[in-house]
Amino acid sequence: FFNDIQCSILAISIQNDFYAPKEAVDWFVLKYIKRIHIIPSNYSSKSIGHFGIFREKFSTTIWPSILEFINT
Image 1 (tube, one colour):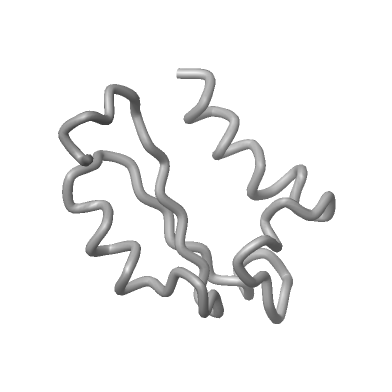
Image 2: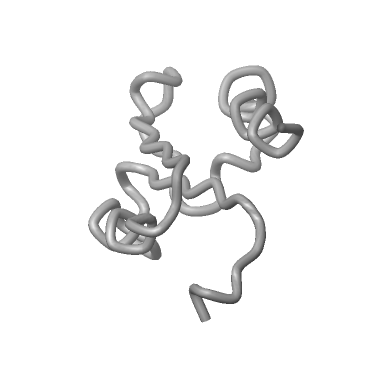
């Protein structure tokens, strides 16, 4: 249903995410514009995982980039 998508999509991959590894997200985003790959060590973290970006500890580091995309 790729042709039915009528909105912008922000695709995020995280280095240690086993649900959606970088290669899978790379494949998925071939049709989209914005993509982010997060390396946990850049955010003073050993591991973030698939749902980790939603933890409050990333509210001042990772979240602003996501919110900026959503608000544009």
